[in-house]
Amino acid sequence: MSWAENAATFLKNDHVMLTPLSAPDREDIRAVAMDPDIWRYFTVNVGDDADFEKFFDSNLAEHTARRRAVYVIRDRQSGRVAGSMSLLSFAEKDRRLEIGASWLGRDFRGKGINHWAKLLLLQHSFEVLEAERVEFKTDELNVQARRGLRNIGATEEGTLRSFNYMPGGRRRDAVFYSILRAEWPQVRSALSQGPKKAAAAA
Image (cartoon, rainbow, N blue to C red; front, side, top):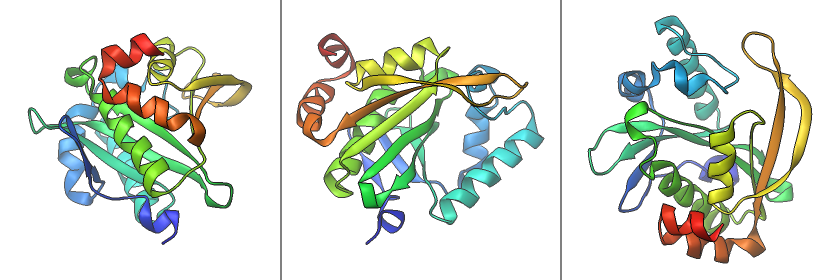
């Protein structure tokens, strides 16, 4: 099967469960998405219910069309929806894709949820889809996201200046990171030990 057909699937470990986005997820996502702190460095802004409806419908349309694999992250301890993360920018011919559009609700930050979710998507990308390169990008100003990417073993590659518009008209400088197939065994070993040990090893 192609990446578009095989990217979205059910994934889980002891900490999180990732399920492909579907229409019934709307209200559970809304319950954690209505927090302006989430969207500070996003290319979209979810400030009210109208914004949320547009955001959710866009994500669902992209997922249904298989242009992205949008995942709902659930915290296995509480059973609650914690946020979302996607596989996108498929370049199957070159064995390259991106993990992005990552966000968590306020109650789930700093608890290792992002770490364990990214481990699942990296495993899926390298071991099932057989990617050669998994990339990430974030706003140069997003210090927390940049630290998080370094902590999972991603290599900072450089900054593309004036990359895109942000809500409000600012031009974002985008910092790119990647993990390569040759690096994956070492990265997987570090990530499997948990957030604190992975950060210490990064």
